Length: 551
Image (cartoon, rainbow, N blue to C red; front, side):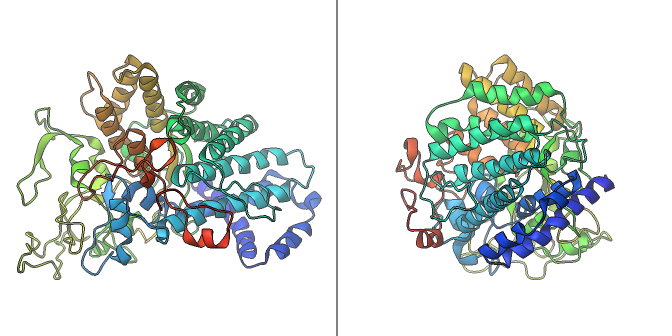
């Protein structure tokens, strides 16, 4: 495992130098820089070529932070919120607007998401243009790898913004206009299909391709593209989705990890479910900031951290309680959870995937009870924190704003915390995971056959449910129970917003989110808030762009 991390570090460090040079140099000077590199001397070995493509991956390390990927895909969903805790996390209403689906074109999240994706696209374009100048027979595979990664960036653009400009020519001089969502979809599909045969067909144990795009990464991206094709283009592609999943499943390279939590542990390198992941390291490849985003500041003492957490992200009570099945009698693990001041509670059998959350009394590293002297006290018309100074993380959140209790909310603990962790965790973050591919295959089968209790679908869901959750299998399924099971398995992995849109519940009401007005301004009759606004700065800089409907 250490060699794997070391190899990744070498790859990233070598090209981070090129990123720094490129970001501090004018465009024409950058072209001159690459023109002076003698490819006949440099781009010869796999190590040199791997180093060259490394810059395209450096951009990905921002995914496990709070700037774009997680806010867009998770805070807009029913999985989590970022409550305004007095003076903390107000941020001009940014987090509340994500939850209430009132995002503005000047908000950080659509701006950061756009810049993140197009920075990745531009880096891929630049490296493709550079490598394509040389005749080394090894180069086509590396160009294919960059094209595959670029297609994944466009998959996110397609999902978030819909009608985005296509820019795959590094030497283009005319600012591109919007392409239609159908055109972006066609680009993603054609690129992934074209490059998959050219890439290594290796699994998670291969250190040389760990954290890089391989053939199965492309098929996983295609499976997600086809799963949402009806939303993107108006035409379902269930057979194509099933075929893409089967390519991965039948290869035999991946399998379910027997212990669910191992997929997200500090030492989760090379687990058998990993198809495409972002390697993180607290020294060399920083950016995994979940501990900072969710823990209370006093938890610094719990884990002997080098920084004080920000006390922000938390799950929504109903989502947390979905892991307890009230239809079953409590077994040895049964207990009452989720009690709030209004007396709401849920009793039932616990799902082992409750390891996704941190709830209950909080203690220091020496077992001392953490005490928050600044806890919210009762006042006229306001009920203060009923636990007082002792910190007890509760699934119940008293309000979204302006004074959510500092202890309220089940915290995001899926990527395990550990003693001595820094503000940057070592846990790797999977973009594509085998359990997701199995669930994608199961859903496509159910939708194709118009039967959520299709034997194949039921078998796959129950396999994951029993192996990872340790709870009784289903005897039948509905769209609602399938989505709930998918949520329990895939919590906080960046798919919930997309899943809710596909299941037609993204615009429904849930705690802290009122139902969206039915405007149907978007393509194919969807609500306009299902697509983000294009940033004002981009519209002002490129007069060929047009804003999405409804903004």
